[in-house]
Amino acid sequence: MNKKIVSCLIMGLMALVCLSAEAQSSVMAAKAEKALLVDIESLSETKLVAVGERGIILITDDQGKTWRQVQSPVSTLLTAVAFIDDQTGYAVGHQQVIIKTSDGGESWTLQHHEKDDLGYPALMDVWFRDGGWGIAVGAYGLMLHTTNGGQDWEPVDISNLENPDFGFPHFYSMAFDGKNNRLYMAGELGFLAVSEDFGASWEALSSPYEGSFFSVGVTRNGSLLAMGLRGHLFRSADQGDTWDEIETDTTASINKMVRVKGAQIMFLAVDGVMLFSNDDGQTVTPIQYKERTGLMAGVLADLNKLLVVSEKGIKQIDLDGHQLP
Image (cartoon, rainbow, N blue to C red):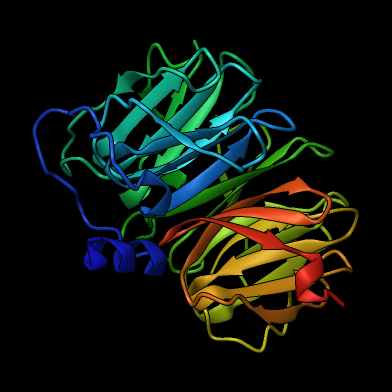
């Protein structure tokens, strides 16, 4: 495993990746389940898709008991995957790649891989409102949108978000608040923004922190959580107007929020650190996973099990076994 790539991903130091002038197909790996995996998405109660390094795409049809790798049209690091239904999904990654599936992840086609003035900056997240309208965001203020399901991708005018001192920040994460129809975005240097038109235009939010936010999440109750560098976690109950800092008792950088059940939330961090909340993120309790590996993203497989992707592949975490408070 390339430790430099792992470190850059976790700490949010996104560099240009120009490994080749053309995207290349992934290599079928003998131990793909143990590779660096960065994101995971549920298609149904039993079927899930995970993505990661070297274009690896893994599928399970039995809640994570067994996994199989499918062919990917790219060999670059895939950073995010999102499905709009049980058939149609998108993944994005380094070298500005966007790939699409129309058959539940069994096969994928390359939609976008375009060099610009900065080369091939990485895309870090993707979100779709429906089968037509989608947004992809990434390094150096990269933001693309489609109105036709990804047949065409065009830049979004975000000139109002440019910082006069350093330009555009890296955009790392998006989260949609379905109750209020607000799309949120988080990035480096404390960047937070909101869109009320599904990403067509954006306004910066007042930020409670100057360090990088690696992820943003919305709870079932509509609370907004921003998380990132050195264990910093902030919560807003008023759609980002005001923020409360949540004491985490850790300096492990937080990568992702996972809804568990009801008001219960799990935050996944580096070094095997998990933060559990049973009050909608108002307080958290640190939990040390047995392996000190970077926990990147996860989904609830059943009421008592999390499926988590990490620096060392797929992990199954028994929630009962951790004696959650």
